[in-house]
Length: 576
Image 1 (cartoon, rainbow, N blue to C red):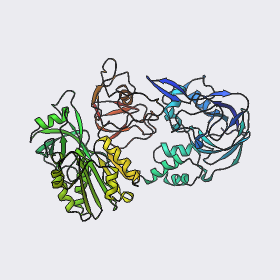
Image 2 (image 1 turned 30 degrees about the vertical axis):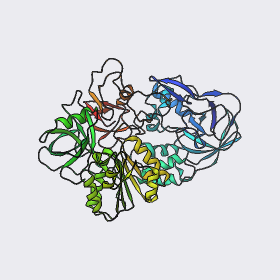
Image 3 (image 1 turned 90 degrees about the horizontal axis):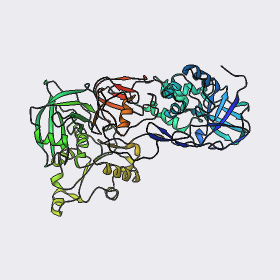
């Protein structure tokens, strides 16, 4: 319904506070209360207002949030409630009029003494569901086309409830708030409208970046080469050094294996090693188009899976293996490429080196490898031979605990790979793409070193087999214990394995979703909306079947699930 003269019904403010939620504490400013009389609007805030999570809310582009009285009535009817109060949706201005399907990005308004410009829809966030007491609300705001919108303050001044809202000018491209929201969150966005959105100068930089990424994104790749786990036969085991053995795998039925991409990994169920069965991921160290897969396993001092593979695996055995996965893969550019690794991290970049060699690449290739000494330097001859076949390759080895004679024989430098060492080599940092694999601290240090030397951070790629860094917006800083079994009585549902975290546990009625179970186990998680909208929680599904509740607004790619709204139908193995 269009109101002839839009007006402010209520001005609402609130400072951030800590709120208990699901056994954790959320720092949030979504609790707003009405104020009476004139209040000053400033460039970043209304006086008395604040935001708890400045990564997703607040700032110049999101200084004031607007929600409509008509949407209040819509949600009261939808939920069958009559207890809503102004500010309950986190808005600073409750307005009569200005519907999301009519207000456009770039529209400008005068309210009282202040002037504003529409910059973006609401950021879809779980906290609005927490405030209203309706966990599915973030998804419903999008699917019902009622997100609300943010304003940038063009001119500071006093406003109050009852002020009329006067339109000063109309934004270009006539792209409504609801339409903009749908472009980002709903399936099948119109590329023409995405390009139109990028022509709107008022659109916030964050949304511009998202739309540019969507336009630049390649076509979605096919899912995994096979679902779940299949049996592959061990044809050969080769000990590369005292701690590393390579396992050669072929199809158990003699058929050809699907080609993998250089840098990808296999996930293996090591049946017989322990109960529950450990699941581990190992990079492919072979040429990507080889008819045989090769993984190379370092025996860890207390590694249940690696110890069993070293001690008990024999040629002819069958291993349960998931299809090749992973996005740590070599680009198809022509510029310089840096292949930087340490220890067993050599395996995925060795596969990339095979790919470059098979193509007779003319690229400038820098091979930088660090180890303690020659006794812990697997694939040394193999890599050296591959590099010799490339016309523009350079090899630099670093030994941190070797004798002068050992370093001399290997033409190795003393110490570890450092920023200073890279600078002395005069690597083409500014023009290069870098691929780094090794211990987590090594990768962090190399990323920082390359960035300071001029490498574009977007062209620095790392492979991490440990757990990924958590993304939990709004949660206060807290000590996170190592992943563990969930508290309370064991569940009675399907088994859920978090492969990177080494946890297998039964699902139970205490958890609404796989994400809730992961949280209970202190498995590091990545999420924002928790209702199947934002796809922050997308996770590779190695095996098993799930159902969704609620259904996500857009399904993820084959072989992936949204753990925030997924429930196991069968035993699951997840790459997290």
